[in-house]
Image 1 (cartoon, rainbow, N blue to C red):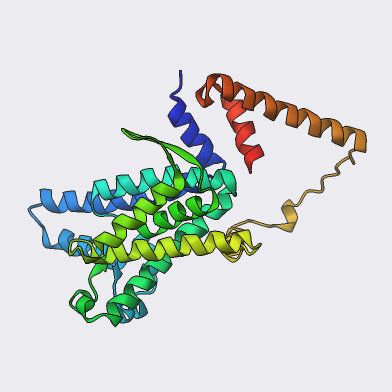
Image 2 (cartoon, one colour):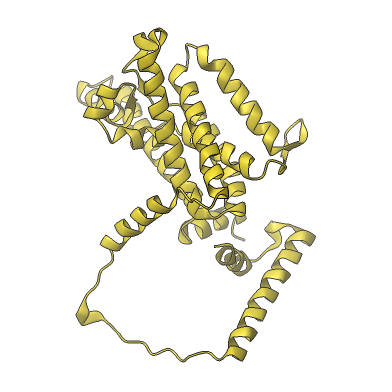
Length: 300
């Protein structure tokens, strides 16, 4: 019998689940960096491998200064997919999965990647601005910053802003409303601003949190900040589509009558209702592969 977790991951990748794709990119970058780090260690710190490892990290991490992003503008994006420590990666990806699923269920999956990117960029820019303004931060200018925390924090705060009364079951605590989870996250980040171990990271979290709130505030007013990013992604995807007149085929589709349309719609809704009833009785894991795929497509 196939592992249900593996089957769910395969289904989400095949259907273009953005949460799974973000996790895969983050893990892949971490593995590449780790492989070079291991090779460097095993080789007795061969200078060539050291140079390659440093080149990768220096060109993926964000240098916290305006001069840094002028010379390396791509790091505004790459830093949020880069992790050096495994526990940093693990916690960010677990949190991304939990809160990304909540936000997806109440909006759509197409909001996740744009908000992740916007949160990461907002966190980076706010950190650079504050580092430039306050003299206490000047000794840390140009220090490298990595991690998905700003983008993940944006998703946490967006979820709590949209559905504050959503209940989460927390280990050792029990049921907690999402708004309290978000406030706790903000409280810890605010307290740690003066922490010398992760100054840039904590400021970036607060920048991501601000973006998460603004994103949902605008969403409730009918302004979707993810639209232009999704349109850009669609344009990029269109560039890779192969179109050849010699391979074009004309397909004639029979028009469906109103009776047939209403019947098909009723049957589809009946299937979804039956699947939801099955989940309420036996849980999500009781669904077959085809039922999970039907539910996933309907949610989109």
